[in-house]
Image 1 (cartoon, rainbow, N blue to C red):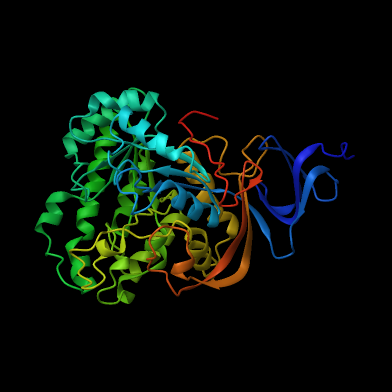
Image 2 (cartoon, helix red, strand yellow):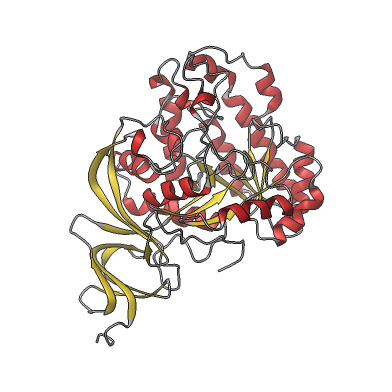
Length: 449
């Protein structure tokens, strides 16, 4: 029996709605920005506004991207909150968590966090949370940052690429992990070993294989082994960022079986691109750790499917065009980072469907699992009581990436000209369409609902 007219602010009806029960025919009722009813299609829920999905459309939960470098303030010419969150919404991402570095100042103190929040608050088109940073000498800042709502702390085990965010050695990381354990926070780690990279060949020139040799798998494997053992000894929660070396998967699986509190992410570039196909001088593909060979890529997909890798996030790390050294294409000189915030869902879906992997599984890796990592209990699923964050997705519609039409600030991406499946037609944040004109995103805090 339907309730009176306008019982809900919005009702979405369709044959293909991705709920916790899979893709099924449902009506979804939204009130005050929250999902308050999910009923069988035909129940006739009434609302001020009703949207009927087209036959080729699926309603999916908003994606959660826990690895985005927004770079504002300080390097706003690289990216900023307005451009990054517009790009996120265009790609079906309704929550991002901003990395503590590449902005100036980096988020290594409460004061720096406040500076970020001040600039973010009136220009966010999706919800934005923040990671804190763990650097030498800021151990006393970790608890205050945690209390101010950061979702955890990022550290590097080698030079971060920017001097204002220095790296920890393994002993310092262990000391900070023990501190984080005392208030149940999370250490997220860029795991490449500085000594191994110091001894690797120099990356100069425009040949991708020379650059690849300069960031060997061994450097990643050694650093991941350190993270695992320090997490084991301290009992702290640890997360491996942007896994690219498939060699590390058995060690990660073994640590998880042992009860080490370890989670792992990988990124669209490691799952869709391969070293063998990267042209000379194509510095849009440069990132650290690097895109590796096709055989490595296959093993990363296996690691996702068997649960060794928990989630897929962008590591959107943009820069200005000049920093990519496009004139010379020198991989040693170019800034390392791939811009893909708007494209992640289409990239992963295009690759997954060829492998017989369902849309439900893709959305779990890109929404539910990153939300769980950040302990966002009201995001990442289309379920009762959750925020009404979702997108209308046309999985069979194809398009060709045109870098000039992407919403992020600098028109460079390795995916320019690539044909992909899956178009995000509309994105909703708390039941309201994200229009790119009126910023309705909130700044969110750890533990906040």
